[in-house]
View 1 (cartoon, helix red, strand yellow):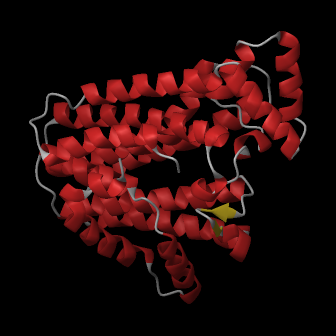
View 2 (cartoon, one colour):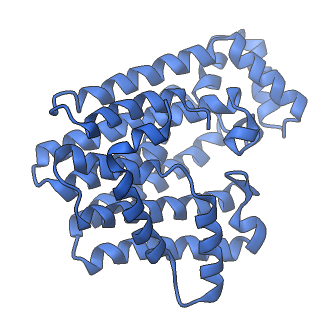
Length: 323
């Protein structure tokens, strides 16, 4: 399964989206344009605009407001990635030096703010107030998720319930917003829009579960970040939570001590083996499959179409992806 196959029903529309997105990234400030071109060169997988466009096509027709919605979420996503790199003190993004690594934290924060403002202004300019409501709710949830993660990482009470609250807000909220925005751009039926919203929520949770698995299984040359990065940063994700819960107390306490004390590369490989040995990988994979099955149920009743087929393929891609 690959993305080029999934985007076939919206291939032309994605090219149209790129024009809108590029236009909204640019400014009269030379430094900002230099950085915008640097970001555009890296071009990610465009999963979020793909979700907007496919969701619109599933329930109706892609139109001008659909392109605005796709540009809005990609501007917001780009802003959050830039801000995340500052917060995480990360020097790499998609295999390239991060914005903060090249231009410093101050410029990175301001660039992120600019992209967020551009997205909101795009909706205001076209009086797409429903888009603003959906997006603002997503930004609120993303911020709450980040803060809950910071709060929880300072204690030892990190459990599955807290973990799922965090990933639901941090990751699933924006993916859910993509599907909701796409549906809202092509339909006024609240029931249909809500179905796409919940499809995206479950897909987003599975997406993050797979992302957390890649920290234990991924190839850094493919993922663009070093394997074990979450461990090094002290992030406690589901594979580790499960392994800690199902291992001897003495061993789990030793692992927690490693994580909280700047683990070396040798320590990271020890933790990866620990998680594999105590079932953290298999358990997380099983839970991700359950969330993808839930996601599929929200669109299963829609009429057969290339857009529906692509959305169902995308759920499989989420589970199989290696980056």
